[in-house]
Every structure is written in structure tokens, then in C-alpha cells.
Image (cartoon, rainbow, N blue to C red):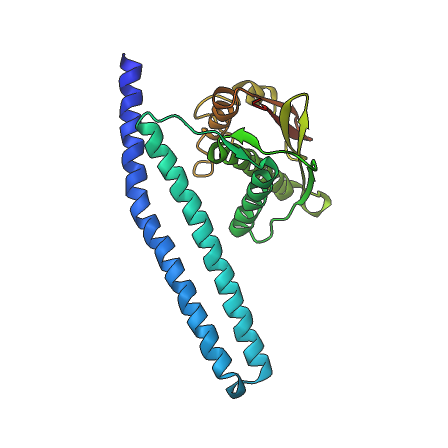
Length: 262
């Protein structure tokens, strides 16, 4: 009963936080859409006054406008995704079940692999990694909870990016960071494999990997919840399995196995 009360309190707290975040997030999305319209107006003005600018200036302004429009589109896209995550939290807090939707797994994995990479690049402009991707052709849509699966992929990719970045800080130019990603069907299951040549894990980390609040990252960089959430998404929500193989100093490979619903 005590545990249920704590979970109920946590649900109410999560719903409150989600609601409070949603309001400023709506402002971000709306202002990005308004800014995009202003950029369209600016483009029209530039077109009417091209003869008043030199060819180089005109080209430079057009490039700036194009970059700003691309940035606005990304803000809107990921703002909308954040809104959908918040709505999921609110649905969970109200006791609503997650909905399985036929989904292109390859598209989700690819999108969040590169989202993680660009997020790491935003934190450290010097960060770079070779990402090797392999996606099976002709895969049919698979019923999953898209928002949850995307979070699981993002968690694993964030960890992979972090471990190769950290190893690069130690070894310098002699080290070539690499991450491999593959998606395919095997024996009635979808298999998502994400591997890296980062620092790897020692025996203690392997044993405690899925513990709540356990993290090897410094304060402010890790919550210790990512792997527990990923395990819950794959094993409890999708009836699948998460496994890993890791060698200290050499790297880690995670395998997500999700059964295909008939």
C-alpha cells in the first residue's frame, strides 16, 4: 500500500510537471511557426529588391534565410514530438494504456540515431564519430509504441555517443570513434543492434546496469534512469528482450529483440 501511494504521488507529480512544461513549449512552437512566416515575407521582399544588392550579398542573404527556415522546421518538429511525449505522460497518469501502432522501425531508428549525434555535436563542436548503418530492405510495418521505442533507441545512442566521446578525450587523435547500427527481422522478431568501440563496462557496471539511479556519468550528465526505462520499454511494454555484450576498454553492443505481433 505504501508503494502504491508513492507511485500515485509520483504520477500526480509527473502529470503536474508535464502540464507546466506544455505551456511554454506551446509558445516555442507557435513562435517558431510565426518566425517561419516572417522569413517567407522576408524572402518575398528580397526577391523584389534583388537588383539593389550585389550578387554575393544576395546569395549570402538567401543562404541565411534557408538556414533559418531549416532551423525553424526542426524546432517545430521536435517541439511537436516533445508535446506528444508530454501527452503520453498525461495519458499514463490517467491510467490509459499505451497504443501499439504499425510503424516503420527503420525510420524511427535512423531518425533518433542522428538526433542523438546532432545533440552531441551541439554540446561539443569537436565531437565526431563514424556511424555505420545497416537497414534490412522490405521490412513491413511492425506494431510498437512509437514514442516509447524512440526513447529506448535514443537512450542507447546517447550512451554510445557519450562513451566514444569520453574515450576520445583520453586517447586523442589516435582513436577513431565508431558506432554501428542495424535493424532487421530474424525468426519472427525485430532486432535492433547498436554497438560502439567506446570504453566498455567493468563487471560492477554490468551487474548494476539496470538499477534505478545507477550511473557512471558525472553529476548533471546522467540520471541513472535511462537504462531502467529502456529495459521497461522493451521487456515489459513490448514483451521483448534487451541483451548486451561489453568488454572493458573495447566497447559495448546492445541488442533489442521485439516480437512481431501476428
